Length: 320
Image: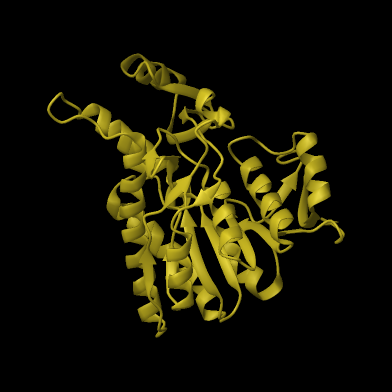
């Protein structure tokens, strides 16, 4: 077995401008072409993915079609539903590419519960964006139709619904994921950050929340003993002074330097910040490297180590 790598894929990489199932399946077919490079490299791959756009759309569909005889499903169930649908699409896409390349590998989705604390302060302060971007007018209308919803402006790209986002403290199906890994199977796990659950006596109870998929992916990577956590995003590197004339690309960066940049508010909340924080958590917990890069830079990372590599403090940072 080669390196054990957890690769976290964003939900927006699945949802194209066309929100139809066929378009999302085609987007995942393109994604699979990149992800299979880890298998070709001899790595043991574990895939996680976001579901923000998908679960948001599903919630809107649930709300619009709800009746007293056919009530809408709660948020935790919607997270599980999108785990199943996205996992199915991703399995199918990976199986196709694996077959085309003549590889011998099986992919399997694990509907994953992720434990959170019932006392997490996030439940009183919803901040996690889900669903499509919309204009302020559309957000105001959605709020009028659904008074319990909260909306915020998200990174200058429009308004989105926000829900509680508690921090993960455990992954219930860790043993199942490890069993698949040891059998040489590629697991798809903690989809959409996992279904948030709290322990109540002898049972697990679902919560109306969405766990950030980067933090859930970090917790999974930590628990399965991954050699690397790779967080895929829209850009090939983390930048400081992003989109400014003096922006700089981070190539190798220490945890200490990232803490400094966080203090300078270099990273947008709800966008790059959780990726940076999850990468820091993994490096501090394991001493192994984390990577933030773009999906289409996977080959560059495998071949040349390009992307932003987050390293322990004993290593020096390099900036371009």
